[in-house]
Amino acid sequence: MHTNYEVAVINYPLMDPRIKPADHRAYMQLDYTSADPWDVPIYIHIPFCESLCKFCVYSRQIPDSEKLLDSYVQALKKEISLYAKTPYIRSLRHRAVFIGGGTPTVLSGAQLADIIATLKNSLPLKNPEITVECNISNTDEEKLQMLCEAGVTRISTGVQTFNQKLRYTLGLRHTVNTIFRWINTVKKYPFRDLSIDLLFGLPGQTIKEFEQDLHTALSLPIDHISVYKLAVFAYVKLYKELETGNVPALPEETQLFEMFSAAQELLQGNHYILESAQEYCIPDHNTKFWQLTYDGYGDNLSFGASSFGYVNGISYQNIIDPADYIRTANEGTLPIHMVSHKITPQQLMERAMALGFRKGSVSKTTFNEQFDIQPEDKFGDTLQKLQQQEYILNGKTKYTLTPLGQYYQGNVSASFMQSAFENISPLKKKMAVGMHIIPEALQNEKAESDE
Image 1 (tube, one colour):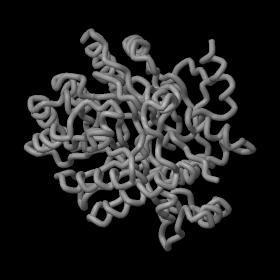
Image 2: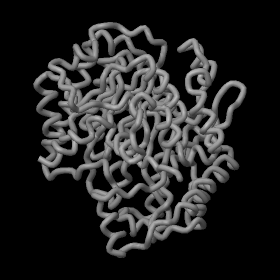
Image 3: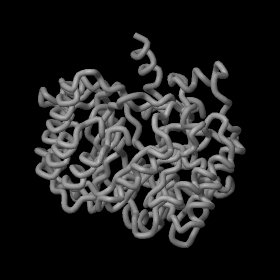
C-alpha cells in the first residue's frame, strides 16, 4: 500500500516549534561566513490574492485597503535588509529569485520593481534568474513592461486547466480565450521563459480531458510546464462541495496515475525535459531556481510571511500572519515563526537524498565528493527497498526515479528522513511531513492550535 504525501517534501530537517531562541541571528550563526561552494536560490512570498480559488490552501484574500500591501512591501524590504547585513548571507552566491504566492501581481509594478531593486542593492546578485508568478487578471501590458525593465527573466502563471467546464468547477475566473490572448501578450516582451501550471485529478476529469489540456499547452509558445496533482484538504471550499456532492467525485488512484503517465509521455515525447518530479522545460530553458532549490546541498533563503527556508543548517518558517510579520520585521527582528535544531552530519546526508529525489535523481559522484562515502554505503537497505518497489533505478553514476517513483516522489524522499522517524507510525510520519515539524512536537502543536 502506498502512502501519499500531499504536501511536498521540501524542508529538512523538520522544525520543532518548542524551540524559542532569544536571538534568531545568533541561533542561526549568521555572524560567520559561509565556505560552501553552492549557488543559492531566494524565494519571496506574497500571501495575497484578489480572490480565493476553491482548492487553494496557500493564499489570503487581498484586503480592501492598499495600506496593508504597502506595509507588507516595506516589511519585506526590512527583512531583506536584516539578513543582508549579516556576514553569512552576504557570503552566499545568490543566483536565482522566485517571487511567488499567493499572487505577487496583486502588488503594483512599482512595488514589485522596488522589491527586486532592494534585493539587487542589498545582496551580491549577479545576473540572476528572476521569476514572478502572475495572475492574468492583474498583469496587464504596463505591468509586464515594468517587470521586464526591473530585470525579471521568467513569467509564470497558474492556468490549471484549459477546459472551461472544469475551470467553472474550480472557480477559476478567466475564459480559455482570455488565457490565449494573455500568453500572446507576454511573448511580446523579451522574457527568457514563460511557464504555466497544469493540474490533474480534478473533480470529474477524464484522462482524455487532461490529455487535451496537455495538447493545448504543447500548441502554445510555452517554455516550461509544471504538472501537479490536485490535493484537496479538509478546510478548503472544494472539499465541502465534494462532500455534499455539489461537484463530481475526484478520479480514482488508477486514473490519476494514468494522467500522470500521459503527461510524461506527451511532454517528453515532444522534447520537453524533466527538471523535477513535476517540472518540464524545453531544451536550454532549465530553471535555475528549481535546480538550486532541490540540489540537496546548499542554503535556500526565503523572505515573506509564512515562507520556508534553510540557512546555515537550520530550517525555518516565517511568521504566518501578515500583520504579525509586518510588526516583527519593523521592530528590527527576524520575523521567524519556528526553526529546526541544527542539522546533524547524518541529516546532511538524509537531506541530500530527500531533496535530490525531489529533483528526480541523486548523483553518486556529488554525494561521494561531499561526504566521502557512497549513497549505498549509508542508505543501502533503503535504496534496495526502493528498487524492489520499482521507485528508483540504480545507474552507473546516479540513482534515478522511475515513472512510478516520480508519481510517489514524496514517499521516496520521506524514506530518507530516518533520524526523524525512528519507530514512528506511518500516520504520524505523514502528519509530521505535512506540518514540517518533528513527530515529538505534534501533540504540542495541536494543543497550542486548540487554545
